[in-house]
Amino acid sequence: MTTLSPWLAQPGSSEERAVVRASWDRARRERLAPDVSASLALDDDALAAARAAHPLTPALPVISRLLHRDADDGSGVLVAVGDAMGRLLWVDGDRSLKARGESMLFVAGADWSESRVGTSAPGTALAIDHAIQIHRAEHFAEVVQPWSCSAVPVHDPEHGGLLGVIDITGGSEVVDPHVLPLLEATAAAVERELLVQRLTHARGAHPTEVPVLACLGVDTGIVTDGRERRLTMRHTEILALLALHPEGLSGGELAAMLSEHDASPVTLRAEMTRLKRALSGVVRLESRPYRLATALETDVDRLLSLLDRGAHRVALSCYRGPLVPGSIAPGIVAARDEIAGRLRTAILTSASSEVLYDFASTHGRTDRDAWMQLLHGLPPRSPRRAAVVEHLERLDRELA
Image 1 (tube, rainbow, N blue to C red):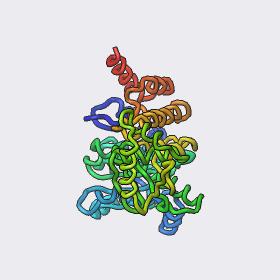
Image 2 (image 1 turned 120 degrees about the horizontal axis):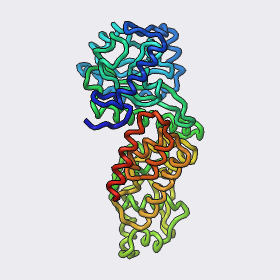
Image 3 (image 1 turned 120 degrees about the vertical axis):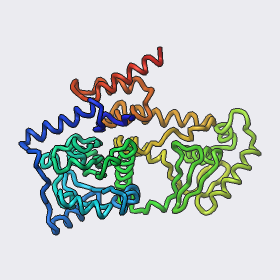
Image 4 (image 1 turned 135 degrees about the vertical axis):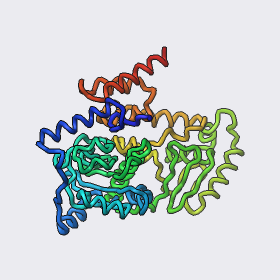
């Protein structure tokens, strides 16, 4: 079984069990007993007030879209959203499982913090501020031990504070290796949605008023303005270059950025004609110089804006991969290296150790400097040290 994070509580791994043991130790220090159970912390009126005021409320449609379709009747899955204190605010999913969950007070309004029920995915994810999976007997409370659960904390996209937790509870299938990446992607999508809503509110504009080009991690870009238009690689290259040079480019400059060999102005004019036709009514292009005549936002713009604001966690979640990764156009290659370099520099110099770990585990798998910095920043008794050292030793063997 592939370990996706050193914090996954998967059977058979001493590292993961160390995290569970630490949680059990905290429960014992709280003088909890194995027969402990959740308590109802919010009555109906207090629950309604807490829901209305909670910062995750505006992002509930995102959670519903990504998770609830897999948690309908017969799925054997419950989806819960809690606040930063571990109180469940929403619990939805399989109706028969909800009825079973009520017997152990896995209901909206109940306190599932680690200090109340001991080890559980929602409470422990909040306690350690990291995603975790808890499998059956790893729960501290005996009443919960027939269940399994996976949970991720959700953070404020601007200052990084803890907002709450998203949890999936059910049988052993909810701790399968694919579940946690789904939850982490959902948390990242929620954080992006919250940031977009704030930025939109601040500038008083609706986000769909400006079309958006997605060109990170894809060779065939997508322009969205209420509906999606997929572009060819060449048109993606052209549009990305024009977005990166809002002052405009001459025919010769744009042609040179697209190809070292075929800089024919005739070929470029033909591509521009086809691109104008593909974007008719969405984005207007002008010639002499070639430039965008109407507003176009790109995922590159969003990424760099987030980095400038210091929102490294959300920036990393927005970085789906290099700019038009399959392109060999000189202008794209140069921009690709610059964007990746800015992301790397920002994370290595300013980001938290959590974000640095996420970067190293995804886009920085072969970045020895990132892994060394991560190692130096870890506490001596961190359960992550063994995995980081092992990865560095593997890199050294591959480079030898």
